[in-house]
Image 1 (tube, rainbow, N blue to C red):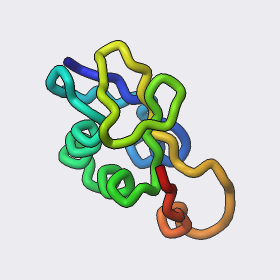
Image 2: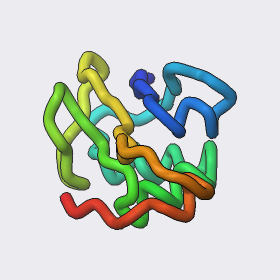
Image 3: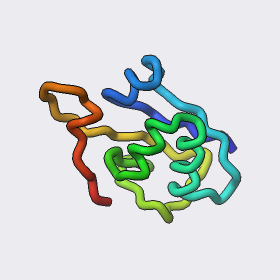
Length: 97
């Protein structure tokens, strides 16, 4: 299956102003599998996911690594939404799921 992952904020900028990312996954995959697939597609974004600096939302709820995915799920990567100065990647703090 191919899932569509919506991108917001600085993630859009990091991925050349793309609003969505298409990620091929096997049926029955979980959020952890999605994170691994994104890591292989874009190491910078994947590292932020692994460090819990970005949340994964599935169907408008924060998802955990074991959350199973379906092709019809609405998936989004949610970066921090606050402003500030300096390099955005340096200002991120851990987000606990």
